[in-house]
Image (cartoon, rainbow, N blue to C red):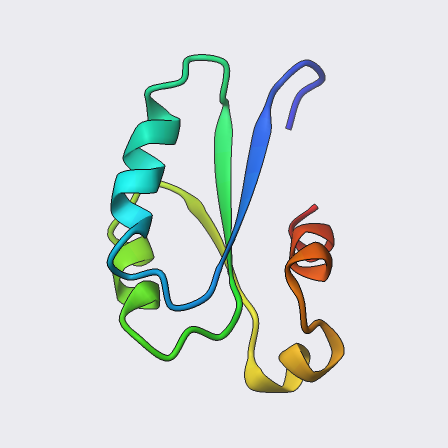
Length: 79
C-alpha cells in the first residue's frame, strides 16, 4: 500500500446476510483505496459471500482464533 492510501479493515463473524451490502456501501466512498475483510472463523456462508466480492481477505482458522479471539485483535491481524 502506498503512502496516502486508505485501507479499511472490516472484522466479520457470521455476517453472510449483511456483508455484501456493507462492502457495496464502502466501495461507494471514493477515499477508500482497499478493503480488507478479516473473517473470524464464520460458521455460516460469510466466507463464500466475501470470496465473490472484490476485496482482500484474511480468514482466521479455529487454531488461530484461540490466540486472537476478539474484534480488536482481528483488526490488528489485518494490519
